[in-house]
Image (cartoon, rainbow, N blue to C red):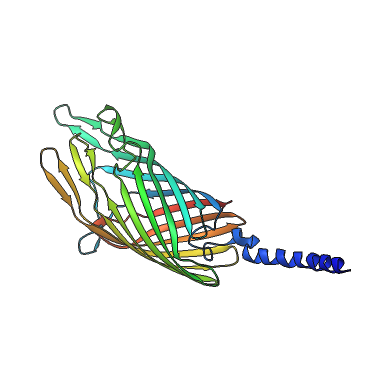
Length: 325
């Protein structure tokens, strides 16, 4: 009789134990959205994504007084960049995530120009199309939640360290003639970035604040006239603030304002000549419309300039597809 009672109690306890486990490890963890998800992936979770960024050369310039000006070139120029980036993320623990991405770049520069020969009274077509395509860079790094989002806490503080490794051609290549060559696809320099991000969730909203600093290392390049130089791109400080919210249960809108300030870039030639380029800054808005379909996430976004100093106002368009395993 005593053995039968113990057996009945154990059988009754098994469903309770199973229910407790589901509360700790919820099956809907993979259904978390860009608004509600933690800053890092939970332990054992893996995410793969592919994103495409498209931008064209802008003929709008912000001067040193932040005044917007249109500018024109003597020739008819047309320039575009298309960057495809594959990103992989894995949660080593609930607080530590490693990630890596590799980018492939396609760029095209088209020039339309006519030249009149006075002696022969002949018009020469000097138009040309220059293209470049190939690997651009590899990003690798890790993120750690110093203050984790768990145990009912709806806020987190996360630090990220990234290393940028240049790959691909950094100079003009496959040169066959004055108008027959390929454009470089890599900037040629290594860089490290440190990022600190705060996130607060109040469903259906979340708010983020970030600060990031990027140090760019010097690199050796050759300019368009094939003179060798040492180029040091200025370090970059970025401050970001974002507000994200659900439009319904499976569509979210993310909004972020970013202030980016870049120090002077210097180019030192083998002859000893030094060229300096003015430091610049920009304030831009980035918005994404994010669709959640099960474990799949599709994002469409745009980056638009609000104001800037000593730089162009190029707009970017994004398309991202991610899947959580």
